[in-house]
Image (cartoon, rainbow, N blue to C red):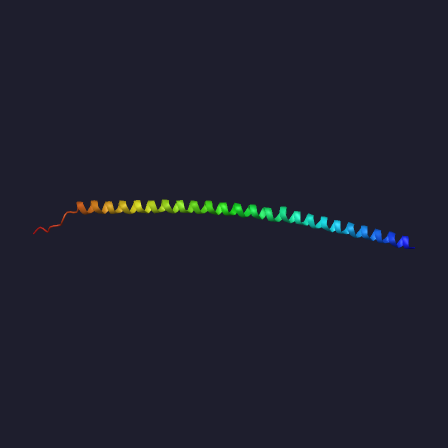
Length: 96
């Protein structure tokens, strides 16, 4: 009878050890899935979005610079035309 109880205890210990191993393997698998299916893609996507936002900001800044240059050129052109018009102006004299 003692041998049977001892054998049962050994079997229970082996079953508990196997359950622990299975639980640990499941936890490792879930950790692996979490890292490679969630964390790494999120990090890659975040880097890509930051890069694209930076590119878009640089393009917007370049467009703003071009627009500012165009406006400056337009204003200087208008002021040059005003100077030319001012020089070409002839005073009106009324003839009686």
